[in-house]
Image (cartoon, rainbow, N blue to C red):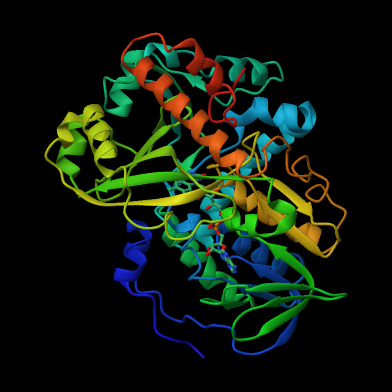
Length: 469
Ligand SMILES: Cc1cc2nc3c(=O)[nH]c(=O)nc-3n(C[C@H](O)[C@H](O)[C@H](O)COP(=O)(O)OP(=O)(O)OC[C@H]3O[C@@H](n4cnc5c(N)ncnc54)[C@H](O)[C@@H]3O)c2cc1C
C-alpha cells in the first residue's frame, strides 16, 4: 500500500536534483513477510542496475529491492552527475588487477557511458544525458601535467582516450581563463542524476522488480537462508545483495573497507545569458587536479553546479544526518565558482547540499561475497559511481545468479583493498591527513611551496583523481 509521497521540501534537503523530480509518489513500504530469489538492499544506481540486469538475464527471477528512504535519496540523487569512464583511474586499475583486466574494465566503462544514454533513450528516461566529454585541467602550476603518467600508461597499450588541448582552446571551451592546461576525455557524459534514478525505478517496476521504499533493513538474519528484516516485515532470499554505498560500513565485514568522506555541491539559479558570455557552451564537465577536487558542469537551463570533494570525515559507520542538508561549505563553493566564472558574480546560489562518498584506499570499488556465496556486496566507488555502477550492476547480477561469466570473473571482484586502520585511528588519522592536504593545496593555489611535512602527510591520503606516488 502506497503511503504519503516524498514532497519537494523533504527532497530538497538531500539535493536540488531531487527537488526537481519531486514529488515522488508510489512510495510503498514493506508491510509483510515474504520470500524472493534475490533481495537487494539499497535503491541507488548499484541496487537498481543490479535488479534490472537480473531481470534481463532471468526474467522469471523474483527480485525484491528494499530502500531505507526513497530510491535515489542517497548518493545517486545527490552527485555531480558526471557519468565518467574509468580511464582516469587507469594506473589504479592496473595495480589493483593487472594490465589486461585494467584495459578490459576501462573499455567496458566507455561502453557503460554509451549504454547509459541508449538505455535512457529506449526507455524514455529524460535524464538530460549529454555526451560532451570531460576536461581534466590544471588551475595552478602544481597541478600541471597531473594526467601525464596516466596517459603514458594507457598509450603503451595503444588506446588514446585523452586528447591534448592547447591552453587557448581549453579556456575557450571551458569558459574560464583559470584553466592553464588540460586534456579532454571525450567519452564521458553528464546526467541529471535524480531523474536517472527515478527513471530506473519506473523501468525496474515495469520489468517486475518489487521495490519497497521507506523500509530500512534493521537486521540481517544470517540463518541457513538469509532474511532481510525491516520494521514492517522481512524478506527471506536465496541471495542478498548489499548495495548500501557508505552505509555498508554497518556490516561487520566491511568496517575496515571504507572511509566515509563528504562531497559538497552548490548550484546557481539559471543564467543562460551569463553562461553564454563565458563561452562554456556545451555539456562538457570539468575537474581540476586537486585531491580535494573541484568539479563543475552546466545544466540544460543554464545553471552551473559546482562541487568539491574531501568534505567532512565520517566516524566509523555513523553517517547520521551530518551528511545530509545544505552544505557547510556553500560560501566557499560559491566563491570559487565566481573566481572561475566572474560572469556569475551576481547570479544567486539556488541550493547547496552534501552527501557521503564510500572511499577505498585505492579509489576503486569492490564486489565481493561476504563469507558465504549468498551474501554479496558492492561498494567503494570513491566518488566515481554514476557510470561505473552500471558495470557494478552487471557484476553483482552475474554473481547473484551464480553465473561464471566475464563479469563475475572481472578484476573488480575482489576483497576490499586493505590499508585503512580501525577506529578511532581512522578518524583521527584521517583528520590529520585531510588537514595536511588542505594546507598543501592552499599553498599551491597561492603559488607557494607547501611545507615538507604537509607534502609527506598528504601522500597518505587514499587515491584521488591524480595518482599518488
Ligand atoms: C555530493 C556527491 C557528488 C558526487 N559526484 C559524482 C559524480 O559527479 N560522478 C560520479 O560518478 N560519482 C559521483 N558521486 C558518487 C556517486 O554518487 C556514487 O558512487 C553512486 O551514486 C553510488 O551509487 P550506490 O547505489 O552505490 O549508492 P547510493 O545511491 O548511496 O545508494 C545506497 C542506498 O542505500 C540506502 N540504504 C542505506 N542504509 C540502508 C538500509 N539499512 N536499508 C535499506 N537501504 C539502505 C540509502 O538510502 C541509499 O539510497 C558523488 C557522490 C556525492 C555524495
